[in-house]
Image (cartoon, rainbow, N blue to C red; front, side):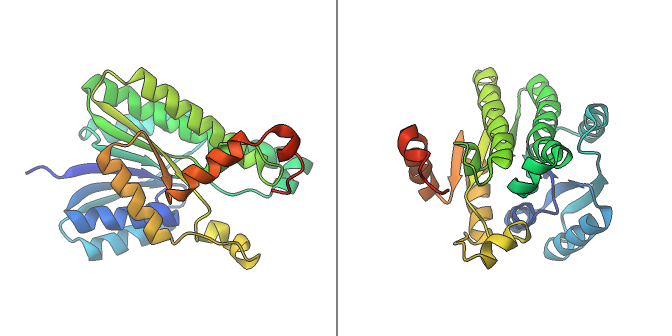
Length: 249
């Protein structure tokens, strides 16, 4: 029996690592971990191999910005067999004030969190649509649902991911390819450590990963994780501007 082939882009993120653990706990898989830091990828791979000796784990260092290099990497991955699941999970949480004061940092935030995931998505979908099979999962954020002064650079990037995933869903609606848009709320990871220090209430990363894996298995169009964020963001989206603009969020 052939093992599922799963590719995780941004595999050193805490959420992605826990997703990988959950997948190999279900059954052995062919797992490809993609990231910018090979040493950190190797640490994740070592942990996965201990948990699932029957799984195969490969680490690939990637350029997350250059379109030609992204396309070449995905082409290389697909040459060894069709991808069953591709999870695009990379990103960083920038300092909004710094993005306002430094255009280079603003550019980096928009590129890493928005443009880069979109380029990876298009590269994967190019092959999935030809084969008429596969599931693409894109991690966006609740921050992309409405621009807020506290994090609108990050929110704008994730808004791009959200709209792009919606477009892919429309494009692929009559095919065998599924696109799952994932919108986590604030989650307890190294990326959000400063929020935790400020007293922010953060979701448990293992719970979030479990919900993501479940949403991908079910082929959901959109998954807010935890689910309460669907209601919270619906309310935030529908606040009239004259009320919203007075809020300190």
